[in-house]
Structures are given as structure tokens and as C-alpha cells.
Image (cartoon, rainbow, N blue to C red; front, side, top):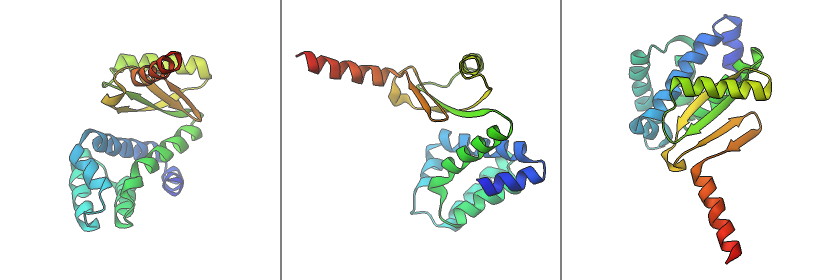
Length: 171
């Protein structure tokens, strides 16, 4: 991720590459078939690259971002790709004086909810926060927000788990 960021920065394309990588990460998150393709060692790297090329053409991913994803696939490191994309986002945000963060919610957040969350984080942290979002229905409700080394877990799943532990302690 750092080598890609350095290369993209040298060519003044860091934002464009970041947007393309984020689009690819979102596609992985939304598609169960694509998740299996990326995470499973059963698929040959040539098959993975062919699928990546087809998806990239549809998403408009080209240049450095596409070459990076192909390289990761060729080296059989696709299961680590989402972490690499997050590392790229962190480097990009840091270069702009921003903080990268992740929000996990039970349902897809609206644009207004994201805007409100970013504003609340900015007032709390004193810097702009670039958020990536992920949907995980297993948290039942609420949010899990990770910014830097901080994590705020306000999910219903965690609250119910804590209540269960507290109830066992009083019995």
C-alpha cells in the first residue's frame, strides 16, 4: 500500500487511485460471490485476474489501481487486499491531515447519517475523518466506529452481551 501510495503521489494521482480502490473494496463488500473469489484459495490466480479485469472494466478501475490489484492476485495475496486498501486510505488521509476511520452498521447508512457522524467525529477529534463503511447485520443495531487506535462499540449485540454477563453475575 505504501509503495502504491508513493507512486500515485509522485504522479498526482493519489486521490484517483484511492477512489478506485475504495470502489473495488465496496464491490467486494456487496457481493458474496466476489468475497468468495477473493478469499478462497481454491481459485487459480489466472481465474481471479480474469474476474478482476471484468469487474474493473465495469467499475472504471484502471491504471495503477488495477495493476496493484492484479499484482496482489498474481502473488496469491487477495485475502489481504481489503487490509491493503484500508492501509492506502490511512496513508492518503494522513497526507491530507485527515484521520481514516471505519464504521460498521447493521444497515447501510444514509448520506445524511454519514455527514452527521463525520461532523460529530470532527468536533470530538479536531480533525476531518475519512470514513469507510461496512454493513454487518450480526451487530443487530447501533454502530461500531474505529478511528486510529480508538474503537467505540455501541452495537446492540455488545450491549446484549454485556447485559447477559451482568445478569449471570447477579444470579
